[in-house]
Length: 83
Image (cartoon, rainbow, N blue to C red; front, side, top):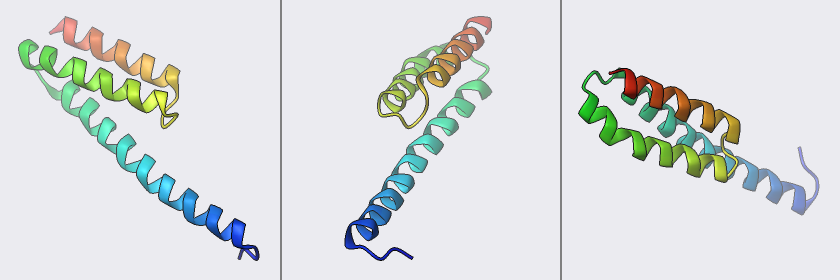
């Protein structure tokens, strides 16, 4: 266990950040799943900008890697265009 006050604080901070990041990453994964499950083009086209924006925000805050966000957005756009 940590012996210094600063290391105890760092542990508390990192735990809080981990929970925050996990929540938003999970929310984004669920949004991607929801978009991939859609079969109507209109509904998917309406949802695509929202999901893309969510992925961009997560990449900007380094919750997910920027290349992962770009790959997901590309795959989702292809999926919507195929519908």
